[in-house]
Length: 404
Image 1 (cartoon, rainbow, N blue to C red):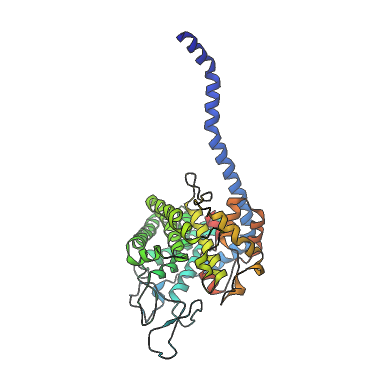
Image 2: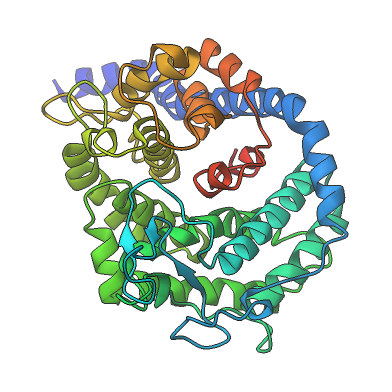
């Protein structure tokens, strides 16, 4: 009996070995196909953006570093190295000019202090352009110049910014800073990603790279422990989405797997269920005075969050809540109104209506992950280099090449 069984096993061994070999090869073949598709997609994006990237990088190469220390904020309660900004929608009381400011939702006060935010956006623009050009050309000149700016912001004790945000979006006569001011540092996301793209370029000082990584490590600790960080994390609308998006981006640079896992849970258990309606819209954004712009902004942020947190072990692109909410449903809801804005069924934005949409990140990354050719074409034909400050403020992902 045992001899018969042994003979059968011996006869089956070649087939068994072949089967096991095929099982081992299948994931590799699948990964190879995915990599081939990713490279092909990246080439398509480069073809669209190459001229713009090289032009922007040429501009960036002649820019000198300028950090928060270059502009003094007289109303700031912080010091020279502290980032400071003021709430956009707060205005002087017409009946008491020296009294506490009053809110006018959606209406930007042009007299508020924005120099630090503008400096950070400029910094993001420089690093994003140089990292994109380095990725296209492999020329280390771009990386070396980028690290001059990175060192000024994060390493040089004379010019660095403190890794905290205690004085952001202050309101005259009311508060010296607020948790919702954390949204201002969404423009550091492409800075962090730029470091990942360029850190191993020839001539880059790894001591500087480690110091920059440590700055972001300290900032994520502040974001996750300070009361302002907790306040922003628990906000009900796009602010909470942007908190998670930032933390995920910075945690990728610092290699903090625990924080990445936390952000995944936050997306699945809090953000998606509580912010999205079953039709894919965002009711809290639709209740604002800029229904269109805020809907675009939140979908961009949520799409980037899904993109940042998805890998071979966690595919959030496929995740659906028990009541049917998913990032795919959010994209499906909003995309038709980007392709044909005139069909938007809600109130027009009180400001900047005519400036939207631009080449929204959700279009590109949605097209990539969902293999949506029409969406890619829509992204391709929209504006890739907006100049209106309000649009740039709400468009932190302006250099998609560095994310691919």
